[in-house]
Picture 1 (cartoon, rainbow, N blue to C red):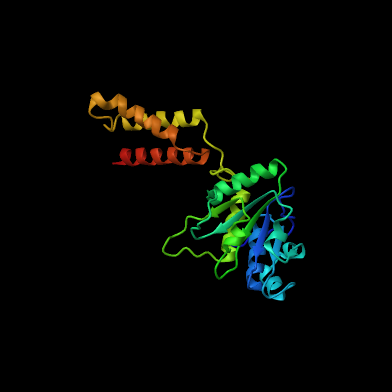
Picture 2 (cartoon, rainbow, N blue to C red):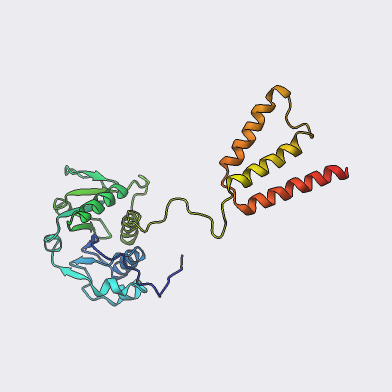
Length: 256
């Protein structure tokens, strides 16, 4: 997918969660994670003992426009050092663990994150190394675990995918998230009078054609037709087209 608007700053601004990559193994994956973060306006990344060192030219190349995230990376020698200033920490894991902790879906985790950040807390999310994920010693430092409901027969998510999933869920909680259903572009919804006139025209065309039969069901059929038109999200253009359909059919009948 593309569509970057380089005229926009892009960041959400204000407090946001910190994405903590624990012992990442490849610069390319760090860069891809940075890109995933910036797609959704996140820019605070911390790295715990990256295997190939830091800075990393492969990470910069892979970030492809998300260099802002990499420019602000904070390095730490261990997980404890990376999360020491945080009030609440979530750990991502694809495997069941013996540790007793609250287990949250990505959506619920980001709802919790949003609420805690709004209350003034600092929140971080731990992501493990690409090969095996977080160790129990890392997860033990977290307050809760995020478990992604993936296919049990193939539950492996790469680092950038996991970061992208959480970044998306974070963005979904924001006030600038569009509604689940948006208005159709440049299309005015039909008003009640326009729908009523269409109904009347349909009635006038259908009654002489014998549509409302048998007679004892005519009233309920007319009611269902009115309900159908009211239920549909018709636009003004839809109404005009349907008037044209009725007119054309009426003309055809007259010609026959």
